[in-house]
Image (cartoon, rainbow, N blue to C red; front, side):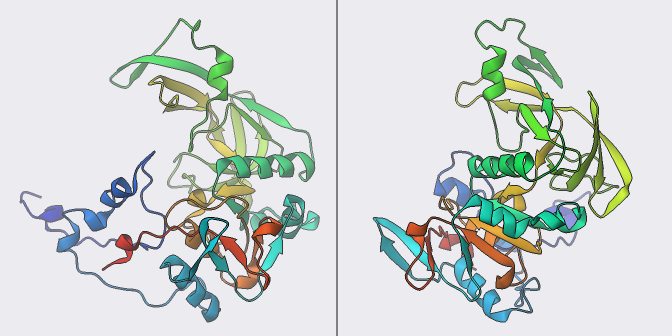
Length: 340
């Protein structure tokens, strides 16, 4: 803009909720996560802060809205339970299940499995990829009709980057294909994806902004070819899109080896991680709390995806249920992010 003013002198509006999940720093400490937030940047002191006072998503359930704010701000009293510092979740209409099958029956009843528009507005949320992969496998194998289709990736090791070009290692003696195929990274599709015609998946990359095919968009599988899949949006089955395999680059743990995976940019979307579901509004949700949430804002984000407490259920073990039907669970909150 020909000047030295912040943002070139333009008016910039930032929006967000510091009760939600902060920037993800892989293996980051609390201090590193805090320092990545805009609240700890040089920009923050120059901003005028405006506060929204009414939650629009749960505006018709004010008691649940008030409860969510207490969760997000860490104001629910903590208790020591089996050497863990936990809170006890207890709100009206709380539905508790102890088996994956019961949760699936509640969220995805057999009569609704062909109503793609409605199914796309429901989800089972969990803090870990391990649990969502387990739930998605059960649903695709046992609940979705049709023949299973397997989509395999092509995985290679990269030894050098030259500009935009990746030089692939021709010597596979020390990194066999089986080893590469077993490697997984959040945000990268697995080596083997199991789908069926009519399965609901989520996109893992931005493909077409004009058509709404962006990271996080849910799509329905229509047909599968060797090098391409045809999908549609759940709300419009008549308009289809072709999706090719694309390249994903990621590190093999702490080895320093870079992996190039060529795979369709999709993942089954009947169950999603809480992080992946941030920003979505759901008609019906289940929260898998068999494993505790582990990051600031995860519990708040999971519970606040629905408009009312009657639209949510919890999957947990019997040992975590209190005498008054509450649920003992973790709720990490970084109070430094909530200070204004």
